[in-house]
Length: 348
Image 1 (cartoon, rainbow, N blue to C red):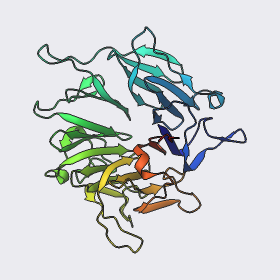
Image 2: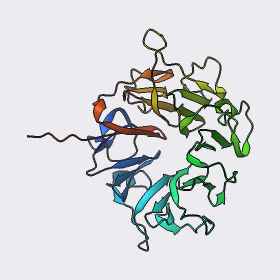
Image 3: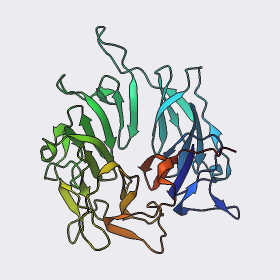
């Protein structure tokens, strides 16, 4: 497997004449042997080598000069399984289903007391996804969501299959394709047609009746994909991150379907396979594995030359010089984008 990254960089992974390259505006191979995945935070990266987790970046005074360092969980509590990055800490769930917090600036570990109290009749419950925004949110294998350590109360019939966090809000995908949101709504990020906050999950009525299969949130905006390959976005649009020509509109408080156009501004029929939101931008991968993006390219997070593209208020096809048939997946986090590819060995 090979990983390629574009966007903001505070690590010594990408250097030029011993100087750190702050903005990578083309997809560049991640130079770390055996890397299998990557988590993106604003001032550091987490590099996966199977179940081993390494940290590299600008956390301490000299950390931007250090090579990737293995994170060693104390007390032989298993190996790293899933992780949630944050500005001050990293939350890790281990192969033993324990949860640990690593405090970045203190370089210290703290075990998180068990907060999952499943009844004896239920099967074992454990985290399958962790995310840190303004709070730490966990999704379990039984479809329950915790705003650590508190369970997000929902009717038993509602099981969640995914969620995503922005700066101060969370959107949640239910098994039946409904989408719920909660948190702050001052920039329209909750999708309820107003700017009110919501302390409990509320169904996004504008998406009711659609079968949403994937959700993404970052900053103050969101994007979702339906089973028909349609894309809906809403929230803050000051950087063009919604792909909706903003004019004088900085806030779109209701999910809005996106029409993709070609160079002649003609609508085209194209199916979205996956969408990812960064803090000020959005990227889609289509079913033909082409990439389309919009929003800010200040740090090269769209993978395009910053001299040619500073930002875009509409989705446009990205120039990604990778063989599409080898592309496995991609992710956007903070101010960066990562694409994972399969390495095809040549047969002599």
